[in-house]
Length: 292
Image (cartoon, rainbow, N blue to C red; front, top):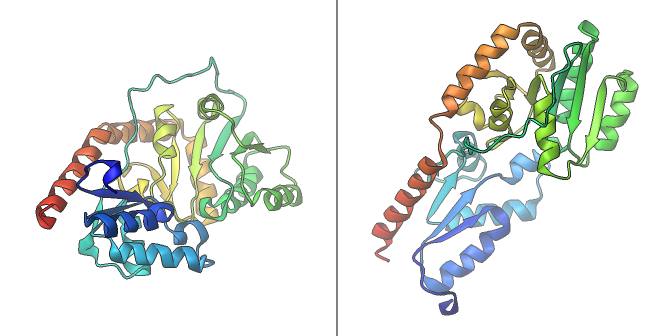
């Protein structure tokens, strides 16, 4: 460890670096902080990979301090992994608000509305609930197009489901987005962003959508819903309510506009500098308690 230079604290992230962090702790005697951005329960639900779960549990038990990206994640850490809540500190993510946004010269389609899902097409992100809600919405309003932007192991099943529902002319799969410009294009052309995640530790894409003045619907099972109190929220499994929320925001432009404004005001108080200062405070407290 001496060849790496002098250091005071070890800061590791998620299960992939936990064992390395523990090795560094044993070799150096320095305190270990684990930063949890997602757990195996988020990714796999009840069908967890026991090897990954065991690494996570052991790492959290051995760590001196744990940082969770939300209170939602902290609850999973304490209830699913049996970790003392006093050992877990929440530091929310933020968004870079001064980034120059590329509008790409895109104008909204005045004849049709575009509803966006953007993320991995996996169980964790709830794409199956999105497609079922789309089917209900299209029964009431045929002038809506649904876009599923992303890729993942559920794609073949969802393509088959869209065909079975006979909505393939209104439900579009983009596949993997290769670059940031494609992501920005999705935001710029959309009238509504939906995040129906089954388990979302945070959900920074909600911040990004708001920066493009796109109204949002969030899963209540998410960390970002803790800080965006003005957003419309539904339980991921409640497809009728999700469909109703989509219809409401598409038909009530004033409500949608007010929600965006309120949420953007909330974002103004969320800074990376604040998150960084919280981390510095944690480092300082670790040094004091360990006498490093």
